[in-house]
Amino acid sequence: MAKLLSKWLALAGLLSLGASSLFAQDSKALIDALVKKGILTNDEAKQIATEVSTSQAAMDVATSNDKILKKLTISGRFQVQYAGLSTSIDGATANPASTEHFLLRRIYLGAKADFGNGWTGNLNYDFANASFDAAFIEWKQSDALFLDIGFRKAPIGLEEWVTSSGNLRAIERSPATRYFVESNNGRRLGAGSYRTGVYLGGTDSGLSYNFAITNSERDEFSSLNGNSDPGVQGSGTAANNTPSFWGNLGYGGKFEGGTYKLGFSAGYLPDQGGTVLGKGDNLTVYSAYGIVTSGGFDLEGEYWWGDNQHGVSATQSAKPTAYWIQPAYRVGDWEAVVRYTYVDSDGRGVNISDGTRSSPSGGTMDKMSEWFIGGNWYIKSNDVKFQLGYIHSESKDTVTGGMAKAQSDGVRSQMQVNF
Image (cartoon, rainbow, N blue to C red):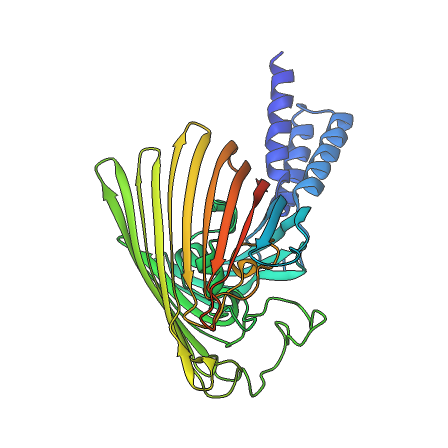
């Protein structure tokens, strides 16, 4: 009995050693010693050697520089949505076709290579959009100081920078955030989202800071993507050769029964204002935000404002404003969410489809608002989650001062898995 127990202990020890190629020779030496002492027979030794070899093959990760790489972490996020939205326009002879569609919203697959001494390589790719979400090299001295070189989101806004897409309570970012940061289409400002550049930041004693110098263009695609975008490997042009500057400051802490976080962020994009980029008009955007939690209650809100030189015409600038507020209450695995958003383009123009994702067009108006009312089911915390909500959006007033109105109604749902 004792000899049998010794054999199993020997096998366990050898499998532990076999989990790393560093101990390959040590395991062989130990097997030989156990045979010599009579604890193992030659046949048993061969069987254990096979087990060690199999364990080694299953646990090793092959890389081109396995002597340098300390750890490789794989991550992912799958989001599958259904959008059912219809738009009606007052006075129109016919309304646009409604949206009734299942879609793969995000299919992220990421990897983080840890080389030790604070150096890592970070990659995240979205197969649903054929685009990068992150691709940068990081040196991290401590939580208080990191330096990123490469491609990631610009540090501006609560929903855009602070909150991950996997933690959005209202499924999609608000029309306020989308109007200020999504790509410039002649109405939206394009002041945020994905940029290539240098990022510096950290957190210490409740204070967080992030600063960046980046290319002026928002672009996450690996190639031309069938249009004029230069892609992440593209070179600059007369329209986007001037760098943009970003900053975000936040402070958070605890109070009896809850937590809070306050923040301010700004972006300065020289030559990226106006109606045509690269003509000397500058764009500046700002965001102030806050989060308060207490027990199952969560309250978030954000106010955006900006200055777009000649953003309406060659003789008229635009100073758009927007805000959103979102209370939520969670009991166990269930959470109720309400969010209200308002956008004033100040004459530049906004379409319902600019702010409410998947919504059919409602024409160019001056202002828009959106209500989201929904709930979340945290099946396995945030890693397996189902979300469902009702959306009502309205746009009104033409940019020329005329009276007009459009509205969009429908539902959006999402199933999410994080790993």
